[in-house]
Image 1 (cartoon, one colour):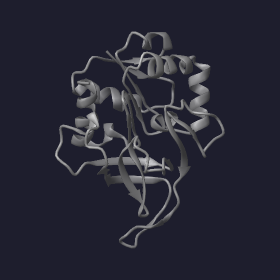
Image 2 (cartoon, one colour):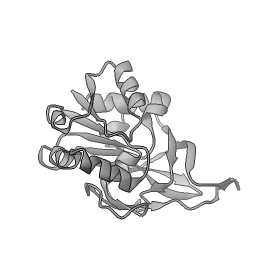
Image 3 (cartoon, helix red, strand yellow):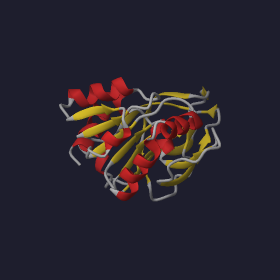
Image 4 (tube, one colour):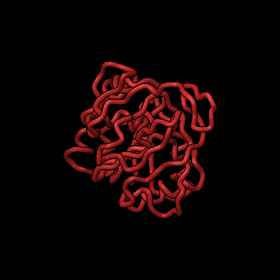
Length: 208
């Protein structure tokens, strides 16, 4: 069973629709204790970093997520803000993240694209990614190049770390598009809005 964390700050419907389309056994989980009955979790997220941390803590999710990801070591897929919550923190706020990935998210800076177009923040739209680690289990099942839909203002900009499985560019500066470390996965993009590319990601997550 795949549990999708329902804490009031994620595009829950879109994620559930994709999993339903792929005929995956999945359920939106509102009560944290139910998550421990799941084999995998999806942590979606839309909104501000500190607000999301507070929501997860107040609803009792924080210790359950830590147990799921660090003690039970079951697969977790973080989406957009969900990926950022898996990091140590964000310049968007002052609260600590889950700390599963050794990064702090930084605000994207407006600038010129290689083609001379002025890019503003938030970064919105389709972007190709550059795969740095082709062994990442969720980047299988589809011929390159991969393209995903992004909507974000903050990102992991330290792209030299081994946990960065793929990068994309904003104003010609690279940022982490995919994080991967053993059973933990983070996608800065929205796979559930990325057509066949996103379907391939969720299909691989289902079959882990």
